[in-house]
Length: 220
Image (cartoon, rainbow, N blue to C red; front, side, top):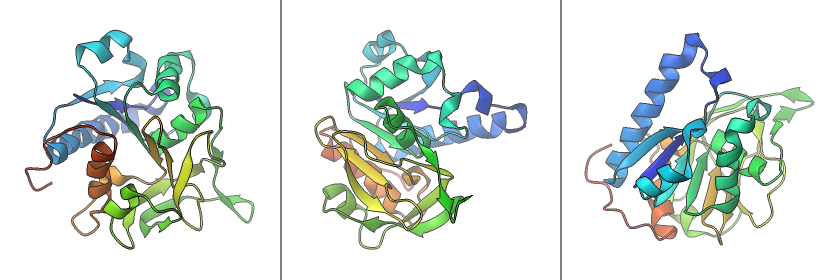
């Protein structure tokens, strides 16, 4: 089974946005299931246990984005950070999940700034490949993906390689070939029919990581 980990802490689930966040996580769970034609189990990061991993026989995990600063995570995230460090199965972190992978390896994310002022990178925009890799090839030439982030990973964690960048954010896609861990600062999970690169990337990730799934059977 594929595990989709909701990385939003309690401090990000304020009443005004809680329903929207929960609806988005549920929608993305079904979206991943439809794309991969494979069961996907949604779990909050604070509810992870070793027993859960064994019970559902996790083959790979995706880590959601989040809406808070990295400093919002406390002791309840210890198991998540241990999981991201040890990677007992392939892992793919989206945006905030990408930042949590770095944080688990001792690299603190930082706000994105231009001319000393904080900025947000947002919209469907291109990313620029900086290395040759099958994950990038799957996205096609001149891939356009969804961006919505105000934080970035400033330097690579040990063992990771940067595959893509933008003018605003240098580390847009980092990969650890040994442990099969991928993080993207952008949001591949929000692909569209006009911009399908993220869909292709997610499918290729499991193939690259050696996880056998049936592949897409419906129009997502």
